[in-house]
Image (cartoon, rainbow over all chains, first blue to last red; front, side):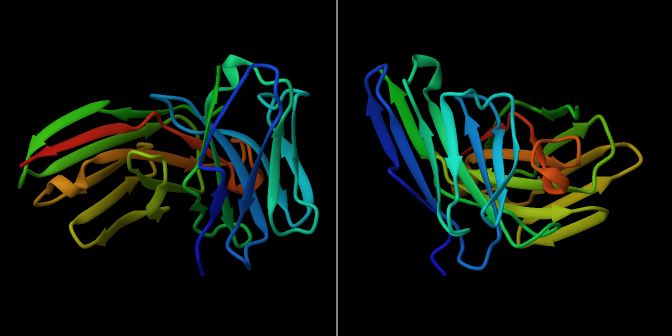
Length: 113
Length: 113
């Protein structure tokens, strides 16, 4: 069990470019969450999956953001036409059904220049 | 929407001191998490509790459901305890279904040798 892993850990991109982050949850976990964290703030919910089904999306997830979990295992978060306001850390977390401890990844830092 | 307030925002103490971090929330919850975040981003879950008190090593977490308040204590603090400590509450009114978490902004703790 290697925990929740995220890739890349750091990404610097020019405004207008697309970026994609990947999250590999703990293997037996069926719930996967994406959060966004800016400096000095706590994480904010973006979206979550139960297996391959995306069950909820936050209003923070504009139409430039899309998340997938095609086989109920790893997930990707894509940001199209990045803006400077997208600069943040994108955190992935996973858990085994409801009511259990949530395990977080190391986060993917995005800087849009 | 649940509001989660932590205090203090910043805390600097000397090695060996007893540390208390407080968390208050505004609506009913099913559980409360205390999380530790080190520079670089990774978050580690310290405790998940829904009543009473839990202890792990030098860390103690308590919760008072009636008063909507929780505390995290660190005994015999050490420089390696320096991190951001985040309180997160689980309630259906948070994003993420029944396991939705609303996070506080965190308490930045520095323990000086």
